Image (cartoon, rainbow, N blue to C red; front, side):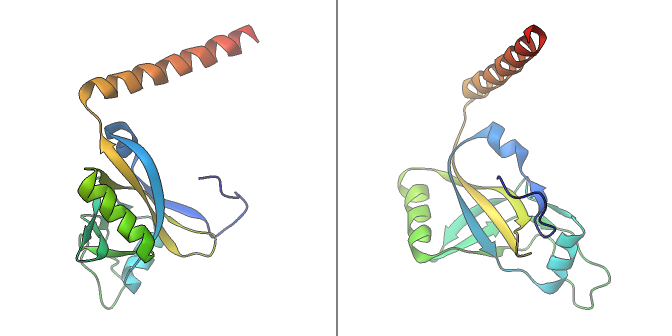
Length: 157
């Protein structure tokens, strides 16, 4: 996610780091998210979690399930903290996501929840396939080797 650092509106709210360990991410899609006012206020304070959540295509719509946005106490009308939230994608993307999940057995995993450069809340959804235990070990070994290689090059140079 190479975004300009000088933009004051761009802000990562929640990141699902575990997703890259548990899943092999093949592609990602940026989605809008339908929020209530108190949810936006709560997100601006950075109180959210998408680690246990997932996305699902149901009845021709894309939903974010089990994501946590903390209640915003000063709000007059609050919100449910773990309600299902509708994600906004165009029809062609929705058809592609449905195809990936139903026919190919892929999973839709939220990777990052953030405010874009215009200050609008967005969710990056990854199209992923679950990793088995040997795959996780292989990924960890590859990452460790990359670290060792960087250390050796740093020491030599």
